[in-house]
Length: 91
Image 1 (cartoon, one colour):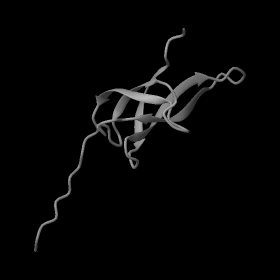
Image 2 (cartoon, helix red, strand yellow):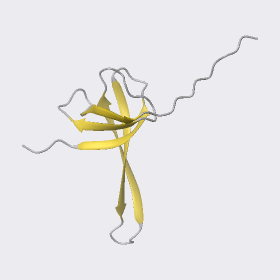
Image 3 (cartoon, helix red, strand yellow):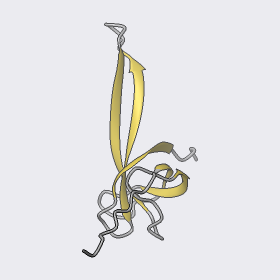
């Protein structure tokens, strides 16, 4: 059997329950024009405890199909995004 794919990316959406969307960026050189080009793919992944949030840097791993679009699962949260809490003052 082959090895499971692993990607590192940034969470772009956390609006679903137990499902997140990660954006994985890939940088490659164009074969004809020799210009460095950025490509990205978005993958839905399973987050059982809802640990990750938008802006977090995460590692995801390929797994069996969990739904129509979900094919990855959360391995670890590498770096948490800085949170900004705005408190309302009673005037």
